[in-house]
Amino acid sequence: MHSMVSGEKSDQKSGGVNERSAAAPARGGAGRTRGRPRSFDRATALEAALLAFWEHGYEATSVSDLTRVMDIGAPSLYAAFGDKRSLFEEVVQEYGVRYGAFGDRALAEEPTARAGIERMLREAAAEYTAPGRPHGCLVIHAAANCSTAEVAESLRERRNANIAAIESRIGTDVAEGVLPPDTDAAGLARCAGAVIQGMSQQARDGASRTELEALAEIALALWPRV
Image 1 (spheres, rainbow, N blue to C red):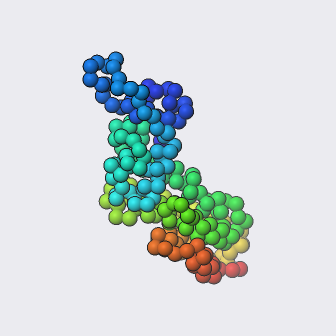
Image 2: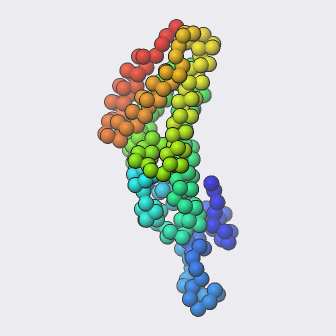
Image 3: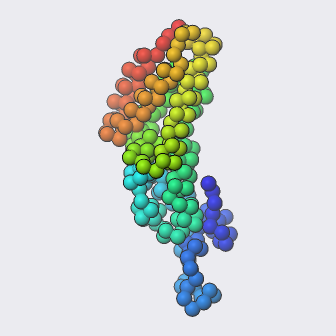
């Protein structure tokens, strides 16, 4: 979702959004204003929302929390991003591009499923404990205590899609003889998914990158060999 507030073309071109564009006309007639409307940078506001949802989850992050960290008014938030759920959907998309794409890259670029999983786990250990931002995975953490069924289901579908991608990559190796023919691709993929999800929670609980890398080594020891 990349909708911008209408009627402020110069701000739209520069990535800024006019904060008064959704407000009612000032008293004294539509032709009078109370000074130059303050604009905000949409990308900066989106990043602030992303960090808030990442830190606190979907349910615990209120609209007032969002307007505070994004430094905009509620009318501007609704005009630029839609409601809280629409904003969150855009946040999840942005997170996938900026922070969560390492898993897909690992599976696509490494020559075998095992190499892809090894790289995925090592990069997860680094990404989930990176300084200067919330620890763990937004898609995993934001679902905690989420009572909004549509949001919970959307996040569940994303997590299950990740496991399905791992299973597909393992299945390819089985078909090509890289892994034994009796390899349980579904079980192995779910094991990898459980490790990654566990790493996310442990990172939230204070586990270091070194500790998560050690966990990854133990998980890889379970991997079947031809």
